[in-house]
Amino acid sequence: MKLCFNNCILNRHFHIFVMFIMTVIAVTSNAVAQTLGASPIYEPQNPSPLSHPDIDRWSYVSEGLHGSVGSLNVRYQRDLVPMFNPTNTWSGTAWKGEKMNLQLVLWSNTAVWQVRVLLTSLMNENKQAIKPENIQANFVRYVLSDDYFYGCRANTQKQPPILVADILDPLSTFDMPAKSTRPVWITITVPPDANPGTYHGKLIIQAKGDIELAFELNLEVLPLILPPASDWHFELDLWQNPWAVARYHDVRPWSEEHVLLLKPLLKMLAAAGQKYVTTTIIHHPWNAQTYDPYETMIEWIKNKDGQWRFDYSIFDKWVKLCMEFGIHKHISCYSMICFRNNNFRYYDLATGNYEYVYAEPGTPEYNAHWRPFLMDFTKHLDKLGWLEKTSIAMDERPYELMKEIIGLIHTASPRLKITLASEDWQEQLHHEIFSYSVSLGRYTQPEIIKERTKKGLISTFYPCCVEQQPNNYPHSNPAESVWMGWLAAADGFSGFLRWAYNSWVASPLYDTRYSQWNAGECFLVYPGPRSSIRFERLREGIQDYEKIQIIREKLTLLNTKMAKTHLAALDEMLSRYSYQNAQKTSCAELVKVSQALLITLSHFVAYPQD
Image (tube, rainbow, N blue to C red; front, side):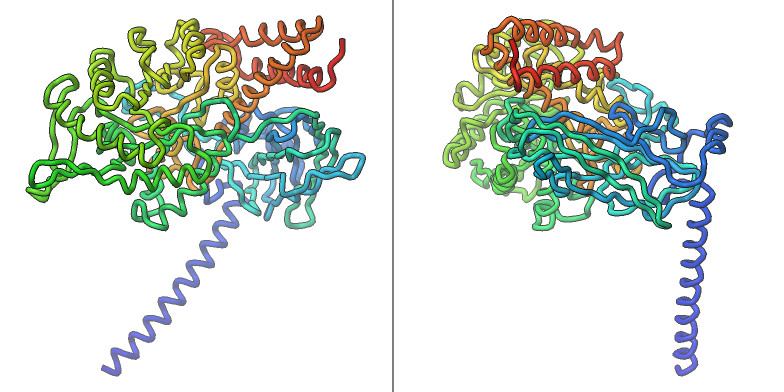
């Protein structure tokens, strides 16, 4: 016994010693690897081998940290030397209340340790300041994607991945391996009470070894106010998936820990102007097509006497949580029909098991299954004061099924609204649908949008697996996300829909690919939560949409010769926006000239001249 005890002690000390040696080796190896130019341990290796010319370019870069103001429309590659004329000066023009984005690019031939961003105030000539708390810096991280277009087919061809810049990570410091490039994303939030004028300041990049780079920032603030996101007219509808958050963070769904993790995601979403709460009223409404299937927020329970009762506790909890962050205009309830599946689950107290009923819309079985729910659900919503903002929502269902469902809703609960996302305009239905979203690549009848708007109905559009470009993939040009806001303004859409805000794949911080869809199709933001280049630029496009509406109104009220000229210029610019034109021309170039025109028009309405 004593011998065993002594041996155990020795083994324990030996184990600790081995672990210590392994840790030293690991740390040393990592330092050597980074010195030699290997990928950071927090990111994937680059799956695309570099060509000799790409490798050779690093030999012409002098030692030390280099930096420049970059373009928002470029995803800079991590292992390549940036090829442009560097500058350390950035200038921008903003409205009060607006968020401004800029991108810096850092690169180094040798390893650089503990890179950090020092934020300072921007000051105008009267010593009034935009303070550091209004400026946010994120290091841009790289993730695996691919640029092969699968369309709406399963990803079975195993195309090689590519490494793309997309994740915005609010780390305080960042190490740069040798022969690497690292973008830094800066967001300036102009306070709504900021005084007009030009603000000047510096942004400092520091690193270990007394390394320092300075960038000059010049921001002109106009006497125009962009309302807070909660007051935007733009109807943003990004579908939320709470179950992905629970799975990724390994917490019990709807536990206190789960709710705490959901809150920052909802805060980020609300800050982009989200108007819709995504809820589920049946088990697997999309037939489990995402990595984390959508479960039901309402438990259907059949009593032993055959009567129905419904548990709304999770539904209520989720809606109240979204409303806490200002997401409260619409409640979309998915759905009265499963996606390619008509099996409806319920809990049977007689058997103690989950059972399923198969029912096709329009059949007596379907009506008998759904009518009790619709009537009870209506009473529940009315009691909470939510009935007028709630819609039964359907996704890409044909006219034959929709007309049967609409007929049942009208008889069982006529006060419930109806929402539909559809690949095409279903002309027989568009008068029946309160919020109608149509596929970006297929709508061809802008007159329908105008007609619906006059009636107070909502019309949005959505990109998905049908469109290779423009889209919101991690490998898409970032300007394509801005383009979405301009297209909405051009064609009179009320807003924009995307079917997945955060339906994460298995390891979203490492690999955005998924067997069912194009890479990154399922989410716009990352766990943390961390924003992305495409999400921030989508928000930028929504800001442009709001500014266009305000400018149009002001130009119309001015009604001068110059105002009419500017209004014509705006209309001409908007006429360039269509899905068809985006297949032939660069979205990045179009967005660039459009935003330049928006600055010119902003100056005119801020300081009108004859």
